[in-house]
Amino acid sequence: MRRQRWGVALPILLVGIGLLIAAVLDVLGARLDFLYRNVGGFSALRTLSRVAMGFSALAWLGAVGLLAGRMALQPAPWPQKLLRILPAYVLALLLLGLLMLLFRIGTTGPLAVLWTGASALLALAGALVAAFGQRIEGRLRAIVQGLLGISSGGMVLGGLAALLAFVLAMAQGPAPVFAGRGRSFGEGAFPGAPGGVRPASPGTLEGGSRALPGGARPEGAFPLGPGSPGRVLPFRVFTSPSTMAIGGGVLIALGLLAGTAWLWGRRGAAALEEATAVAPIPGWRREIPRAMVGGGGLTLALMLIAQLIPAPRTNPPVRTVVQWDPPQAQGLWQRACADCHSNETRWPWYTAIAPASWLAVNHVNEGRQALNLSEMDLSQLSAAQKARLAEEIAQTIRNGTMPPADYLLMRPEARLNALEKELLIQSFQEMLAR
Image (cartoon, rainbow, N blue to C red; front, side, top):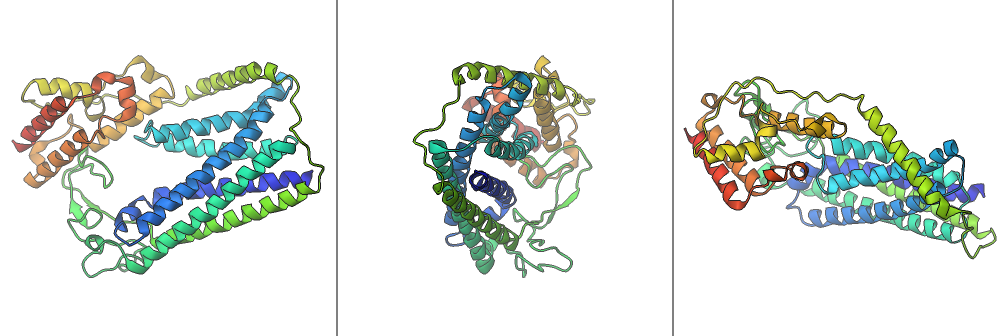
């Protein structure tokens, strides 16, 4: 029985760690995906890697969900019942984090990423507790081990595709426009640079040190914010293809280890007497409302603890007053933009309650850092900077990046139709052309 449980727990642990590594690699490799998009086969291999990792994650979540759900429905007195609920509860928190990322809720700022990362670590620990805390036999064992076999195979395939993609990238180099002037992209691009760091040509998206207005951020939609104008920001890439290729190799190794543990567990289980059905849980129907009440109690406790983590809501003094033409544009600005891109933020009652307060403060801080009309001095900007700002604002409004989706959930009046968007864009352009 102990060998049988290890045959389930080890694949859960190894695949879970691999999925966490794959998520980190995907975030770190986002810019490399753009740089190497023209390398033959690179984009297709990266897509294959993501699809394989997605199937691996779904199979892993299915296996862990079966174990955690069965454990939550086992009868126990209340203190022990809460402990049995915990694996399923942290798994629900992980699913909530994944939904936040999917629907772009809390992605302005680090909230969704931190939520998902922390809940993923807790879910991994909870999965091990669920694997060791109950008997896994009969059809339940067959289904769980089948899902874990799919999950480990998906990780091997995903890691292999990622490894091949970045081997191609190292062999062929980035798109020509990003290669720099007389420099290669990769190790030793310039003296004293870490691997994969290089100053690229001025004027390219990824490279060069360009004079930008204060508060500029390389990845931001808007290049303006509080700070001294004319600050020089270097655009550099710190993740090399060789580092990402090593990550792909690590994923392959973890997948192979998980597959080996899966086979070991199946052989150990084959020596046991086969059961035709899963042993029923006595009184499981009565345990469903008890599990829901326990989950509600845990949620209430977390909500109370969350109120102890402050998120200061501030409205600094307004230093610059913008004159809008036509006047209707000011109403559109206040409806859709001013809460996050000025010092005149409206703070509804729910922004005083965590986690809504964390979400709102993240929005406002990120928005003000990117573009703050209450502190922007147009006289300090060159004509080229104004033109670039007008172009970026127009693109961001037209493609629906701003306002963000989660802001529109709470402020549906901020949604602008096509005519309103064009009016606001035209007003911005006229303001920046003065």
